[in-house]
Length: 75
Image (cartoon, rainbow, N blue to C red; front, side):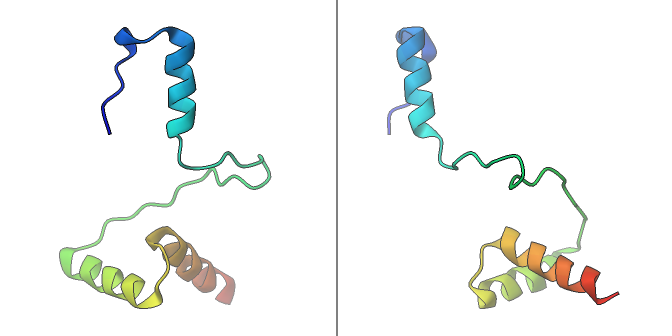
């Protein structure tokens, strides 16, 4: 795909092309997730996580969210 450079295009056309490039649909505010949870893991731990994600067949973000919520709801 050729790279779009703004300087070569009129503003309206550039905005239209950018809108078409977006890959994720916008969510309603009630559906949007706005908080982040991050952590650092060692290379061996990351390898374990990646393998578990692969076995699950889920995207990594869904797998992590599911595992975190399952643990959080046990308490």
